[in-house]
Length: 142
Image 1 (cartoon, rainbow, N blue to C red):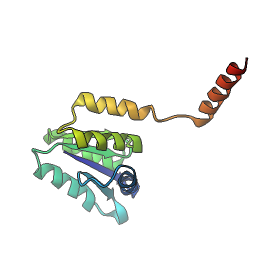
Image 2: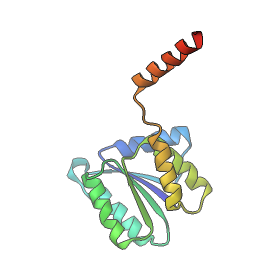
Image 3: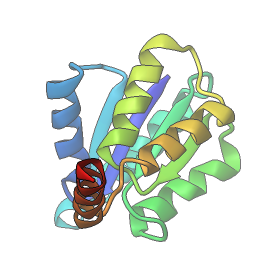
């Protein structure tokens, strides 16, 4: 199984560096920066990788739904049953997938949906969290 991080610009490369620092370097996590200086080479590299390794599962994370990278990767879904495509990539999502990849041979749709939901829970309006914390502290005083 391979986890492919691909974004317009360097977001995916930065995420891979962060994963390396937090979890450790994993040769099954690949990162590509698409459209740097107008080049489509990285998009084509991912397409070739998927198409020439049809027995291997690929989890592809893209940055933005409807973005050029995501649209290119969506084309792979038509002819390749070995990929799962997730958009809106964030670090908690990538971390959980990397951890799951290290312990599982394949990631099921159920696994993937669970990981996506857990990563959504990491999103928060911090001001609201602080207000809630203060309210709880005030309740404890009474």
